[in-house]
Length: 85
Image (cartoon, rainbow, N blue to C red; front, side, top):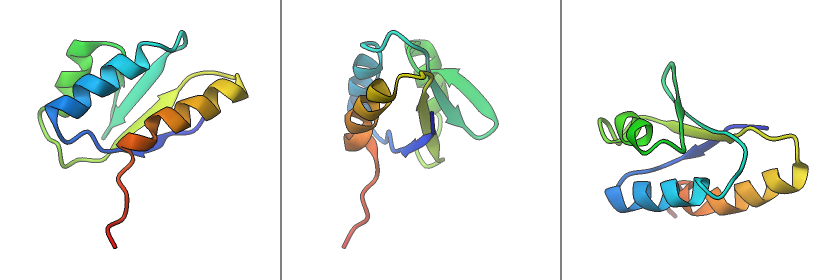
C-alpha cells in the first residue's frame, strides 16, 4: 500500500476517477494536505479537489492483495501527471 500522486485538474477527470475507484471493494483514500478523504464519496471527492486544482493529491488503495494493488496502479496511470519533454 503506497500513495500515488495524481492530478485531477478537470471536472471530467474527477468524474472518471470517481467511477473507476467504485469498482474496488476495499477503501480508497484521497490525501490532500493534512486531510484524508473517502475517494468513493462523490461529495468528499469534489470537496477535496474542486476547491483548488493546483495542490498535490495522493490516492491509496487500502488492500493487502498485491494483485489488486498492481491493477489499481495501472488504473491510476492515466491520472499520473507525466513529465513534459
